[in-house]
Length: 194
Image (cartoon, rainbow, N blue to C red; front, side):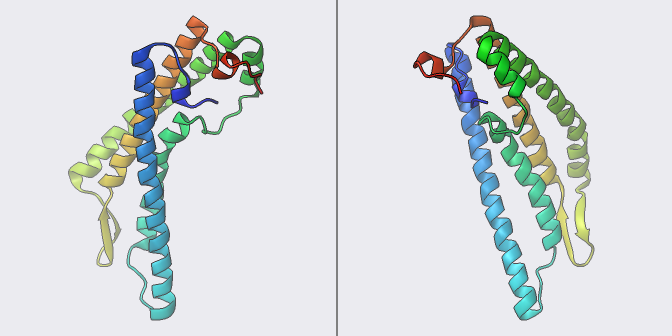
């Protein structure tokens, strides 16, 4: 599966939008990577504190659980944008090798289905975010560690919205390629398809 910015359509506005979307998702993914490093550091310090000093850091399980959810949604849009989201595309590859335009049309249809499912996620999660923000809902144990949950809900909402944007962009690019018959970069340069 090609990266979104590699699905060139020949239309400047669409191609520029795909490149911009790819850069925004790459920035979100980098923030997710930094969060992974922070979680690793937090766990290490907690283990050292428990083992050597008998003083664990309060709230580490809650912070790790919230961080994992946030990290997934910070990085998933870029995973799709880079063409690295796990999927089975043997049939699609077979069709694309014989009829590239039909392959792009089927791929666009699959991405449209993905966009619909993510749209359902966004519309279902939006009220949860509003409730957690409005009520300032907290997680943790009273008297030990309490943290607001709305920042994580906001990250899930923004990450889902970006995932929806990537699905829609890929759907648009693939549909245009299917309609216009835009060849792949490999076929333009004379290389065979794998």
